[in-house]
Image (tube, rainbow, N blue to C red; front, top):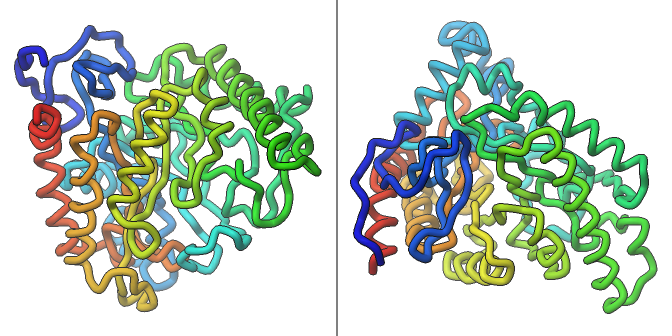
Length: 390
């Protein structure tokens, strides 16, 4: 390994090394055998983010008074709530900002069932400007989410769908092309590349046997990723393609990964390790998928839950101390892996649809959780460097 470069105060939070040339935009590089984000100034960057920041979580009948007394408007909430909290807790990225707003709040353990989860709108360009933090942008180019009880699988070879993708790229990417705080673009949230539980599928995959389906699935996925990437890059050649946010607990078809490889810069995978999968299984799965297509991994969503006053039925972990310990075990176990470039935690404020968060429904942090998170996040660059050198 080469001699360690000088330490540098990363403007996005934490200390890291000066590793590469400045380009003015986030990118990924493999340096000394380790993948990493490189920030606009050329510094190494681990994306430690929080997902699902949503102001209406504080506008229920039982907590709207907190919103009025503490914030009063969205800009104040973003600056004095979201940004202040994330910075204090050692996070440096705004993750996917949409939040469940309906769907029963059930803990999904069986992805062979259909769900109909509705989400908020997420942050606008003006909201991201107010926040002034690195962020990710999603581009919903197909309504094929596993949680979507009424999925619509488009014909990706049709001119109608291509026109829609081109519109989405113009709508979202054109205005972000010069934004130095944008990491890159997600596509669909946990897409149903495996057959959807509802029975629906892409039109050109219906009725095929297993071998023919894999071959055709590669063709469909290749066309999908090629089309989306081409239109994003036509409007914004500067930012990363973060790809679909795959559901790692359910698995990812190899033909889809092979098809995505030429077009995505980052392999984005959601993975939850409580009673569904253990930490070693997560590490092995992520390592295998990364090696299979030679891409770095961003854990796009990971989280845990315990019983609360608002959601007493959340019994995956006994309490918030256990949640903090699980945060450290889940992420500490992969922090030194050469393929890891970051993680985005689920979520910010607990509501009665999602059922978990770093803060409760009264906008108060869960101290036993947050204290462990803060301590861990404050050491991530040093721990990653030591484990990489081992």
